Image (cartoon, rainbow, N blue to C red):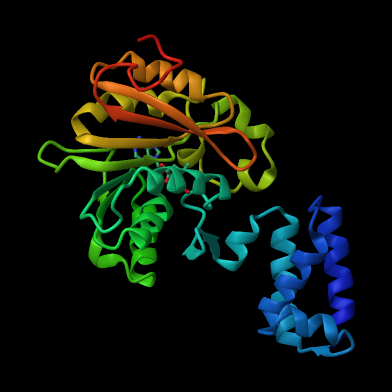
Length: 294
Ligand SMILES: C[S@@+](CC[C@H](N)C(=O)[O-])C[C@H]1O[C@@H](n2cnc3c(N)ncnc32)[C@H](O)[C@@H]1O
């Protein structure tokens, strides 16, 4: 039997040696999970014994984290837009940066009570679509993904959030003839240049799937595939909000301006100041963006 203080000290050391910056916090959160106790209680009672079964569960979690499995994979959830999302290794763990896509889309909605039709391309956990459905009570939406297990995860998240009646899920790229046009398209497509993935932090490089990360040689393959579909997908007043990586807004807009029937609107930055969201509308090329040729 060991005490809370001893278990935490050992885990802190192992996690710090593995290069995890927030080792102390993560050790507390994992012990709280393994013991079914609040972390504040653990902090205030370091001499308390940790039962053997809880200690074994804690050690297993710490060992996995020391191998740089994402913290979210260990606990099975991640908060996005203030909502809990189940996560798994089949798709990306939702990132705070992606909340910029939700913000940009909501700002463009004049009437939140409207019965809008939403499309989320590369839905993963469903976080973008479900955050929007949470804010737009009369909207309905379709999430598409090429990974079946991601769609199962998204459907389970919709169920858990009480949003399933307004969400549909389809295994495919983007859109099929016969689908209703979308008022809002959101997409966080894979955009990391494939040669850069190995240099990312181990949690991403080794534990998140290439299907969610790799955008091909220059990171833009998925944009080249999806953007030409948007003029047919978007309703006449529809807007598309596309997450991009740092430095990709210009190249993605360049792809868009080469597509007849797409208009580039001003980009949106994330909280770190990175140009994170490219905004497109159905219409004439370049008219909405002062930086684009008129
Ligand atoms: C970067 S993740 C984004 C997941 C989620 N939307 C988010 O923001 O956290 C990209 C997702 O797109 C899916 N995907 C990759 N290529 C796709 C394609 N051509 N069409 C549709 N989905 C695709 C992946 O399986 C993955 O779930």
